[in-house]
Amino acid sequence: MARHGDQSQSGGRSITTDILRTRAAEPAWAWTSAVAIPVMLLAPALWNGYPLLQWDTGGYLARWYEGYLVPSRSTVFGLYLHFGEGSSFWLDLGIQALATLWLLQLTLRVFGIVGPLRTLGLALALVVTTALPWLASMLLTDIFAGLSILSLFLLVLHDDKLSRLERFSLFVFTAFAAATHSATLAVLLGLCCTGWLARPFLNGRIAIVPLARGTLTAVAGAGMLLAANFALSGELAWTPGGYGVAFGRMLQDGIVTRYLRDHCPQAKLKLCPYRDQLPATADEFLWGKSMFNTLGRFNGLNDEMGFITLHSLAEYPLWQAEAAIMATGIQLISVGTGEGTNGWIPHTYGIIEHYIPAQVKAMRAAHQQHWDLNFTVINWLHIPVALASMLLAFGIFANSIWRRRIDDVALLAGTVSLALLGNAFVCGVLSGPHDRYGARMVWVATFTVLIAGLRYFASRDKASGHLIAS
Image 1 (cartoon, rainbow, N blue to C red):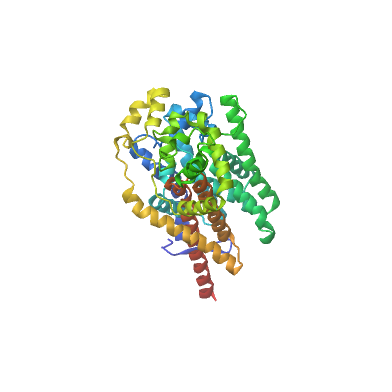
Image 2 (tube, one colour; image 1 turned 90 degrees about the vertical axis):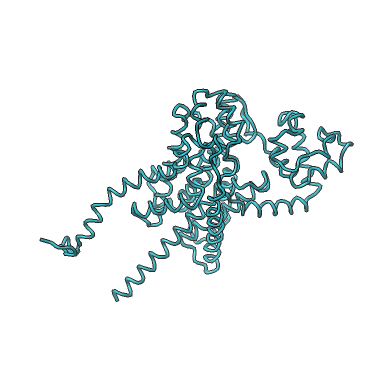
């Protein structure tokens, strides 16, 4: 009878009973991990009793029913939500959780970090320390912002480790993510442009075909959005609202007030009578009870906001540059979890009550609608982890450049660092800094740091094993 630690010979190799037990247990752990991770990712929604909602959710939900375009509300994401409407949107959340699991596992696989226990442990760390489960549990585009960075990274930089089906799936996923939000599209396109510029200096680490394929995801995402806009509204047009969002940020910085004081009343602008009454923030102007409503909102003011935005760029270039740098910096460190996820979302409630009355009872019974959500304690952990993860990701990338050693971890850290900087610029400059825009991306930095840590300890253990063997 073989005792613990006994060995048998198989094909010239020694196989201990411990190894055999481990191999036998792996399928069970794989199933446990495959079930447990999506459940952990959806824990906030399961506790809530209904998918988490946000102020912007209603605008996306209404796209199917209203049949016209509104600023900053992707029709592609609106169709995605409508697809899961019959399941009270649990189908949407299931897709988000499974997509997250898929991309986490695929990333770990290409880095040689295999095993269900490692995957489960890493996922648990992300669930506890980052906004990831709150993003996966919410009816909002934000979950796709971070996931698209991983999918583009895999598609471009690890093409040789993927099957044809995986390449196709990553392409479709990345294009869809790009179509869900203009900021996500801009960040992905910026990463691809950076890849083309950096390619000559990376000694063949970026191949032309995968990079071209990655770039085409942004093109496909744009085409997807235009097609959805045309199908729902009959207009072959981009999602409106770009000038309005940028105008709001300039108003918040005081630039709009200065422009109106310099040019009224000669310019005869609609906002001239209100130049001394403008709200202090973009949110108050665009979404509160302001003169924006009185003057017809986007339909009545879009041309004027575009005129002021373009002319103030030309007239105050230094002020604009300073404001842009400041907004980017503030956005970079604005990473708190839960912004806009509270009980005060009347627009979203109104949309559900009007168009999906069968779900009102379940929605009203949820914890969120009873103001049971409070992110103060959660952010005592999430914010320090997010900021530390960003610094470490930047540090890994900077150290690799300094040492001129660009390995797989350095490429991931570089991709994530550039994505965070691009996201901070796009969102901070155009929309103004918000915690929500940072939280939806920064968890990828934490994931990067965890991968770097696992790779470091694995290489150290391997080096120690070689020393012992010698």
